[in-house]
Length: 204
Ligand code: BEZ
Image (tube, rainbow, N blue to C red):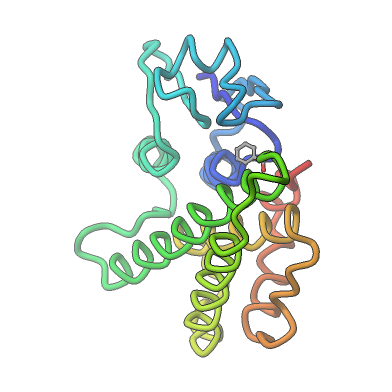
């Protein structure tokens, strides 16, 4: 299989963490599309994915699998070990998928925010939008904080998503000091970040 990714992409990181956690990393050839952005779709990504987005997976049959959530589910369906997406009859399923949705929402806010603050010419930046997006991320982290103790150590798609989202905030928004008022998520993230899969995929 081939995975088009960029080391900076939190969506691709999620997929790589899932690949490592499910023992499939050695079956995946990584193709680095560093430099991709909404204004620089890059030739390799555009050729493979009409949406010009990463991650994109080409499976062993040469079929394209796109959208990080779909690729994660695809990989999870291909192994026999502990399911990262709990089965339909599991009590944890909706909790895990909801956390995955929350994490996805943080990233759907943070990545455009990065483009808004780093890529868009300064004179065209819209501070009201920037503030509103940071508020949205803050509210979401506040919502998670009281339940941080319940996040636990077990690895699942929701926790992987949250860890990749927090990792992206640290990577791209150093000045965004999300830890100050959130000791619970801070401690959880510190422990989760020690997983081999997280350490092997630190963004750069
Ligand atoms: C980034 O550089 O922040 C980035 C790169 C690819 C996808 C998403 C984010």
